[in-house]
Image (cartoon, rainbow, N blue to C red; front, side):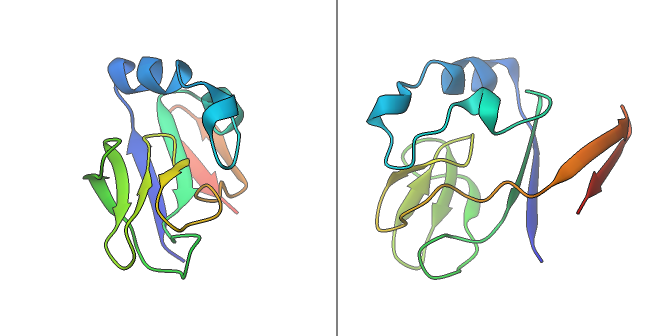
Length: 103
């Protein structure tokens, strides 16, 4: 399994918090997708046909899937292209500030 684990900047966190959830294809607020706002943890698999998105790319500065042109924001939410859903958030937990367990 391929995971995206991103240590987000304060600017990225603020930008994603301002998004109007009603405007999203798969409406989820940023705060509902993270346990700690600084860390985004998602499956690195496009929800269209399973390709691997490229980080820090696309029209929204998050992730871009080069296979068919899906654009995700820095919260892993689908914003443009054929993907029907946001990047999936797996079960994960922080054991402490230096240890992340996925699964």
